[in-house]
Image 1: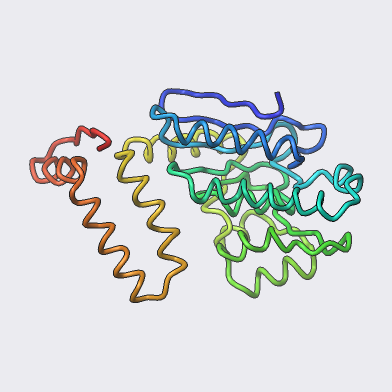
Image 2: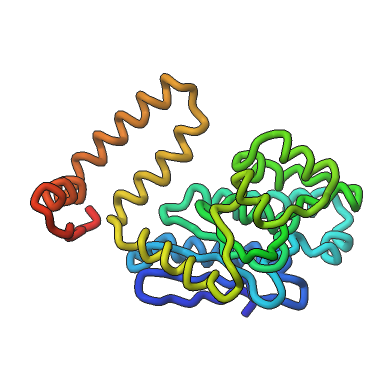
Length: 256
């Protein structure tokens, strides 16, 4: 299987398992990722998703051999539309998705990292939007990446195609943090467990509200988030959480 899903209680690991193509985002892999993420979004037992790549690195982006063989305009459009669908699936999904990166995350692979809610990498990981080097500007990857970092660093990545290191990726906001290879897995798991200990319902409301309000003007954003906080406040988990805090005990989430 090119996409492996490993479940451990309330955390799922989704592994792009095609190291011979550096975990390229081919038609098949894109479709399989969309299907697996959709299943996990509907799985009530799963609270957090970790996305990673097998072999030497995370993902080199699209499979250029496949891209070269497409030739027809409608096939190119279908490929890029499908890739965009995957990115939207991650952003619009109910559950937090954490990118766990080692090696390289290039082009659509870098886009995939930027689309995730959180991202962590090894110290020696590299990130790039190198399409300009082969005459194909990274237009769709820049949608995700430019929403995580500021314009000047983004334009430098796009115009030069040069990779950036993990320490700089953290500095500009592309990733949350980086660790040694030996610590990456345990550190990401620690963060995933911390998130999984919260109310499912609260995390779902919060994630979806966060991304929606980003696209709104200030006044509209405040009106929308005030409404969503009211919806959240009416939930049993909010009442339980406040009571637990005041009574100095651990909350018992009902996820409703």
